[in-house]
Image (cartoon, rainbow, N blue to C red; front, side, top):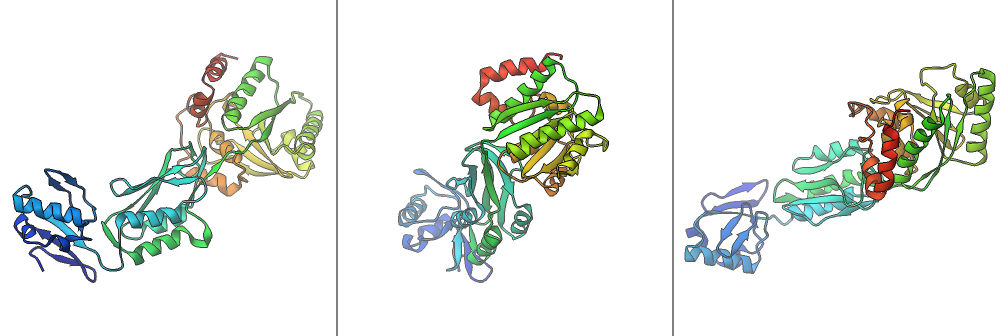
Length: 383
């Protein structure tokens, strides 16, 4: 064994060769070895992690014999069941990536996963954690539920050593694909017709601001605002009847899958809206969400439809937790109380209701820059 050699695990040989040692080597003996550190030659640099072929072995030995190489070279020879880091990363990436994910070729031993289309990123965080508890395996991602755009990097895979046991990689692959479910996928937007109900008196200009804000968000993600109903009466019985009629027509008869509701507080059980909803067989799934701003958002269901109650600032295009929930609904995801509970981690996500900070605005700016500028000016004009 050359001076400075060591064995990792069962039989992997890693060695440090001086230029003099390397000059005495048969180049053929280097074939298949892995560089553990860069080797800088006059003809160029062989990067760390390079698997030496005959040509690279000849270059190294020739450089050592000519004096062009005067630094030690660190090498490892793989065991029969070892995988190169790029092969291991590729195997993990293939297993972890689901629909809407593309792989980018490895670069400096890291393999990136990118979104194939605009949508919402989904991560099985429990499996992600378990995979990363395996020594030497690394899979790191953006946040679950985050809005992403096509070609955006959403995750990366890396294997720490340049050589790793195939058995270790197989354990990671098993977690990444357990029960046939990938760890990462991007769910694309569907084209939905969305309705809106406002249950408080609003001026014409305020209603225009509300609809402009809703349209901006919906159209940026491929859906459209189909209809807005305003129920402004102060008479409780009449308000309940009008809400009931609106819900029955919009959800049960016309089948609108999503209704945005403004003016109904999550903390007011006496609201005639809730009485009308219950009377039609609907129910509130969650009062409030663990996120700020927008902690008074509520979620309800009626038949196949979902109703999302907006906080007051969310009615006028300001950024709230609704901007984390609505895009997921527009991918066809059936939002549940569990989905909303998961917002708690990272739920303190904005300092103020800032109309420029909601997640759909940058997408809108890219697709409809002139229209968005006009709408933004309207939204910032005092009502």
